[in-house]
Image (cartoon, rainbow, N blue to C red):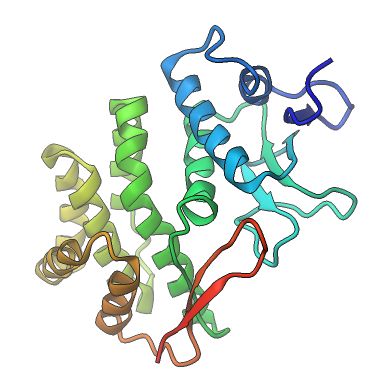
Length: 259
C-alpha cells in the first residue's frame, strides 16, 4: 500500500491511469526510480508543489492536462470535483511528459513562487488581455526551462506556436504579437526567433514589437512593473484591475490594485 499522503491516481473505470500519472505516483516516495531526466524534472516540480501547498494530490486520466487547487477561489484550468479537495492533475493517456511538466510549472509559479497574476474587470477584451498576459508572461520563465529539459523538439513547438497567427485577430493582433516577440526573444535561439519576426513583419508590427520587447526586458523579473507597462502599451483600461498573489497556506491572497 502506498503512503497515505502519496498522490492517488485513477481513470474512469477505477483502474490506475496512464503512464504519466504513474511517473508522479511511483516517484513521489522515491529518490529517483528508474526515470528519464525528463521524468525526474517533472517529479521535481511536483514535489515542490506538494511541499508548499501541503494539499492532497489526485491524478486523474482525462482529456486534457489540468491543475486545480481546492480550498481556494481560483483554479488554473480544468474541472471541479465537488466531492474532493486537493490538487487535481488531469491528464490523458496520450499527453506527453513535456505537457505535464509545462502545466505543473504554471501551477508552481502561482502557488509556490507566488508570482502576481493579473485580474481585470469582466469584458471580452479585458478577459482576453488578462489571459494573454498571465499565460505568456509565465512562459518567459517556463519555456526556457522546458527547452532545457526537453531539447530542440520543445523549441520547435514553441517557435511554431508563437509564429502561427490567425488572419482576423482584430484588436488582439498588436498585444499578441508583441508578447510573442518578447517570449521568443527570451526563450528561443536566433534561428527559431526568425519565424516569429517574420509574422510580426507580415502584420506590419515588427519594429513596434521589437521595441516593446526591449522595454519589457529591462523590467524583468518585476512582474508587477511588466504588467503595468504592457497594459499601457496595449492601451488597456485597467481601472478596477488588480495583481493578485496567492497564499497556499491560508487561502487569502494579497492584492495590489491597479489605478
